[in-house]
Length: 82
View 1 (cartoon, one colour):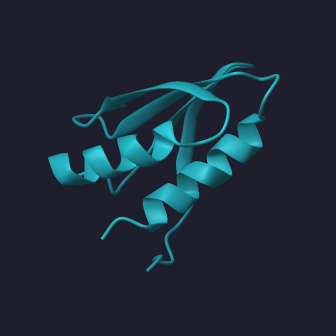
View 2 (cartoon, rainbow, N blue to C red):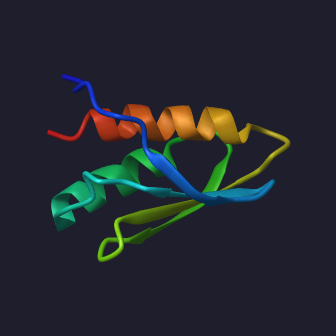
């Protein structure tokens, strides 16, 4: 069941990657859940997680998706954290 959470906060971005602050990135289980979900986002080539800083960097192919779509998908993934 999805939870109603505030959107992730963008801390850096370019035409092919975006770094977001995810408040829910607390434990290893949450990190694994988010990482697995983000890897399934269409157009995302790789994902890096910094649990200590609560940051996720997603590298994506801008010919397949947009920054806005990636961010919306990350919001959806985070909302499914149990």
